[in-house]
Image 1 (cartoon, rainbow, N blue to C red):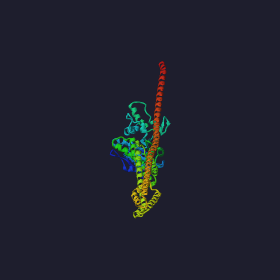
Image 2: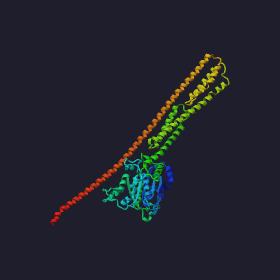
Image 3: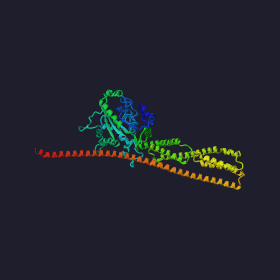
Image 4: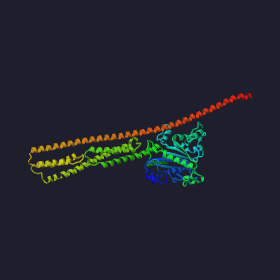
Length: 593
């Protein structure tokens, strides 16, 4: 997309000025033009820990996000860089670099907590960047994760006891990647080599105990395990000598530690291959305009002093998109009808069939673009607008037919009326000549194509308007007896009554066709709604099964740890028991000596 190729450098997405978070209009406009699905990778960590360098590597650049070369935090707020995804065609990789946590210049960590929460809310992969090993200090620095339930609401209405299930968060939360910088330990446990992922899992094991110290130890670990079932760990050696760290933007890979270069390449490869498209509840893939709306919703919630609610954000997004989907469907209907409809139509059914085909396409387009249409309000609005459009076209069709038939009658019967004015038929035998001419002209009129649905009615109205003229010619024709004149008058009346009956029958047929069309429209809405509900139900079931599987996986891990701890405790008790028994056995020998 143009938005990818034109974004040569990062821009600030969420500004942090004076402790206030504000969405940057320039960045929002960039997002609004990007219709690609987005893979959103956010990185968070203490300031001056090399976060920006990793994000530049993901962008395929040495320069971009500010690295800085001092102990001051360079990145303020949240910065964004949109680049074409290197492995997923027609996808955009959105990189979010956040200001460093724990910056002493800020004075308090209130802003840090919101930056941390926003990075989680907006991303599909969340990278936590820290220095050294995973020890208690590292866990203490990650205290923001323990505050998530105080900063974010998954649902607008929590459970009856006011507590939200961690599964509610899991369905929204991104995958978790821990990047350990300047890691200097050997990856092994009990003398056996282990992977970085195993090191992370070992570091997240809980203590068996109920003391305050045990609870403080377990809380961040428990939160990470519950909120982020999918976890990955990468370790990085120091990239180069300390003196050269401030020159990373200008150094080539050959100037860096070879282990670090390989580790950075493995990290990037994992992100490119495994980071998922940002997806909302219901399987809704996030594109640029959707991310734009999420940013505005979350930042506005924080600014107003309320907690960002993921469910409400999705519903707010649905309101915007569903309204747009209605307009998109109506525009499609209008365009299709204007291209295919030629007024007047020969029959009402011809118009209704065309409306039905265009209506079906419009409903399908709405269904494909809409989501979370609570109580089907937007679909009902679409149905009401389509019904009004149909009625308007019917009125236009009727008027077009009336105008066309009136013009046609004027062209065909105009010369006859002029002849009557000139007295051509005011003579003996003139009435029969006049009737013959009238019949000839009626046949000519009826043979004209595409007169529309008003052809008979307009003709009968015309003939009725000329009854006085016909009667005058009849009465002046001296070749006819009074009896013949009376018979002729009755014949004309009968003919007129027969035509009126035919028109009435046609009106009843038209009304029946309109009723049938309304029923077909209703059934079409129901059919497409049912199909969409079945798809949504299947998607929801899939999400619930995935969430349940993750919870069961975590419970199984906890159970396994509990069994291992219990086995360890029993093993220690057995060893102590054996030691005590040996001590007792040796006591008589000692007494003898």
